Image (cartoon, rainbow, N blue to C red; front, top):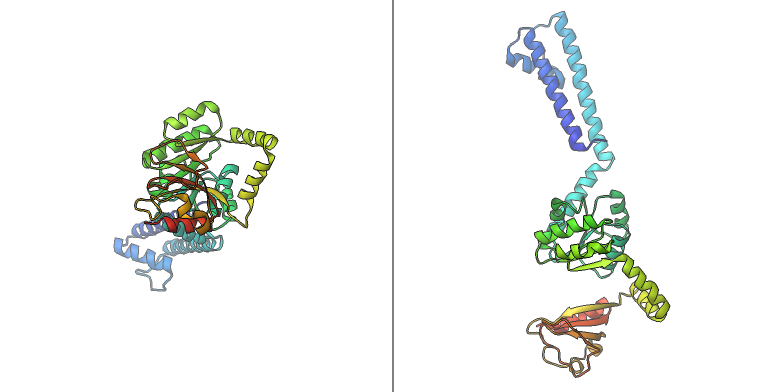
Amino acid sequence: MPSFQKRITIIVLLLVIIVSAGTIGYRIMGWTLLDAVFMTVITLTTVGYEEVHTLSEGGKVFTIFLILSGLGVLFYGITNITAFIVEGELTDILTRRKMEKAVSKLKDHFIVCGLGKTGKHVIEELIKNESKFVAIEKGMDKIEEARRMGDILCVHGDATKNETLLDANIEHAGGLVTTLPADSENLFVVLSAREMNPDLRIVSRVIEEDAEHKLYKVGANSVVSTDYISGLRMASELIRPSVVSFLDLMFRDSSRTLRVSEMDIPDKSKMSGITIQDAELREKAGVLVLAIRRKGEKDFIYGPSAREKIQEGDTLILLGDLDQLRTLEELFKP
């Protein structure tokens, strides 16, 4: 069915045609332009005024057809407006405008391109971690399915197009993950996203191995092969089944969001310069420090000792749930 905007255009066009036809018809009868327009308008609106001039037999027949045509357009307009409300298009427009307003206010949020099987798992994890994000998907059926998972913000459109990324407020986003089914599509998204937001962290799905270096070249920070992850998982099930069971419970337990997370130590932090033991992170927040990466270094200090000092600019790799990590953020504030 045509969109409401298209149907309104058709109604307006029909009205213009009828008014023009009525005006021309009365002009042919010898009436002035103003009298012809006036007679056409009072006839179509059925206000009940007297005729401007006495109508001939032909004029009466013409007026009858003009009235019937006007009533037809009126009925068509009422039907379409009623359908617009009943079919939910009005609700959809109001919902879309509300969504657009909410997205425009976001900052440092994440953008998920594609709501297929992989994208669905991505937003599940973002929901569990209470992260701000916007999903982009061109299939309304997938958007409706995703909305059953929670009150999430979705942009209906093609993620490979710049205007769609702008609708997701990419200029103020903190990260983007693209899980589209074709490497070429993911390549377009990464290229556009990097150009529109140079500071954005971009993670892309890759299907073919030879596409990996291309994705890095156009701006991806990280590339993930679903085939590689699946193979690694299957090998781990053979070699270290208990570890896999532990990780499964950690990620799939809906009653507790235990995660391996990271935290950057801000400048002038209250914890800067003191040891892990003196910071009492385990006692105060319940988190476990798995590793430390010093500012500007690539390598990690794995399993740091209690005597290891925490420094400004460090990145701590932690094991804890969301509440524990929030408590830790408070401890590290300047």
